[in-house]
Image (tube, rainbow, N blue to C red; front, top):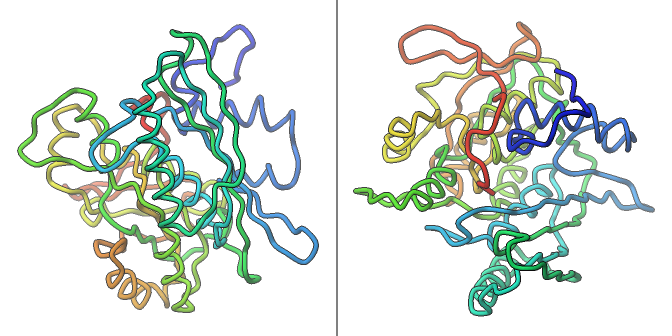
Length: 339
């Protein structure tokens, strides 16, 4: 659907789904077209002198800013680090810009900054530059954080969204939908029998362990906005392949599944902030899975499907009742302000 100049920006344009894709392809890409941007990965990998450098940027507008398992500060650091490591880079340095609403409590700012500091230390990255802006009360919602990150790609291996091949296996590193449902439960002030906690964490250590096996990892993605379904669709379209996912193999915590059913949501489209999806050569999938299971961030890893030659650019879901349906991109915004 063409983006019209008469249309205003909607929440769905920030969903990571179909409307986001249209906005990027019809507005941003024509204006800034270059070989790095055209790849539409979550980072750009460039050669500077003799070094291969990965660069990424992101913005965080989550509400509430404090939630079970994390806060906007840790989320900003972990999310930026994860975008770097998804191309095989070793994250090194971050920048951060803070947009603060007048009247924002200083104790909350200190709490967020302390959380960011701990997340940087845990990932082995340094926050080396930044900026702060304050806007009048009512011009922003408390605090927004914009981060950029840079890292080094240490070898010639290429992990990218267009490298999936027929026969590859699809692996997720753990349960889906934890972050999004933690946000929703907190936002709605729901009293649940079992608390749902965000999975926000940096995945560099897990990716290092995976790559240390020598397994042929073709694609990596952290399924954030739009969840697993959106990430798989992006990979299928970029690689011009089809994918088949077995719904019964996708790990989802019972409490997350229950809340999704209560709210009428599909956990396959719910955001994650500490999980990855890997597209791996079929011959290497088994031993890679064993290694992931030995890592704390991969103990619930599961092979959920495969890459096929049929229906290129589409993801098909084998359902629990034996049928098959298309797992498409969301058209609008399922969960706004989730990251």
